[in-house]
Amino acid sequence: MKTNRAEHKELIIAIINQKGGVGKTTTAVNLAAALGELDNRVLLVDLDPQGNATSGLGVEKSTGMKCVYDGLINGEKAEDLIVHGIAEGVDVIPATINLAGAEVELMSEYARERRLVEMLEPIRGNYDYIIIDCPPSLGQLTINGLTAAQRLIIPIQCEFYALEGLTKLLETEKIVKTRMNKELDILGVVMTMYDSRTTLGRQVIEEVEGFFGDKVFLTRIPRSIRLAEAPSYGQSILTYNPSGKGARAYRELAKEVISRG
Image (tube, rainbow, N blue to C red; front, side, top):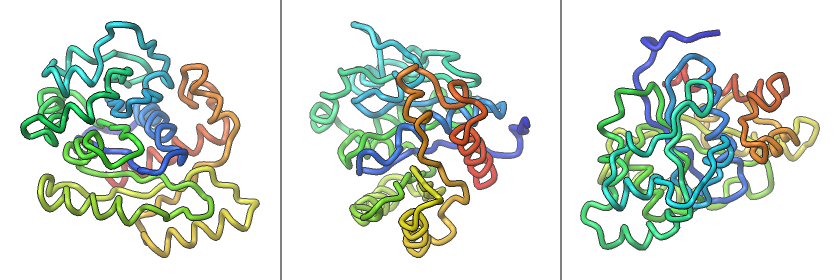
């Protein structure tokens, strides 16, 4: 099913959770691919020094390759950093190991929290969605992601202590909204690694819904070996296992994102 681009405004979405291993990059990559499949123009910005969103879509990180670091620190134009057509409808601004030093380097920079805003501004009109994969921390890179984004998606794993640490994340979101980015709001919370057969999975969803209410997406991302395997082949789940439950879930999530956006 194709979507009409006129049905929604251009949207910048940060995928964020300072807790690692919750499916953050998996969600960034596969949501971008699913939105692209629905005839949207999508830019995936890899803001995580680990660069998993970059390699997860098959972009080979080579020596001397320009990446998001060059835009944030060296003032390179975003259009010169983009790897085009990496998936259907999807372009990528990659991350390399150089980005690991950006946290420290940004500390001494003027208006450091607005570097990503300034970098993306000239190309915003080229895309329906810009998806930012933030690092699993609340440092300068994540602050840049929050300052640039209009909406947040928070992936939460269906496990014990699912809400642990989220208070600090929400406090940071409120500070950024108050001081730097009045547009910022939570688009939704997506439950990941869900197993409907377990009591724990259902209990965690009840707990998260009690906390976030209708911000929780109806779509649950299932626990899936195929989802875990896809990045090692440099593919989204939509191309690696297009008819599987993981691909179906991310297609449904993309439709929810469009309807909320």
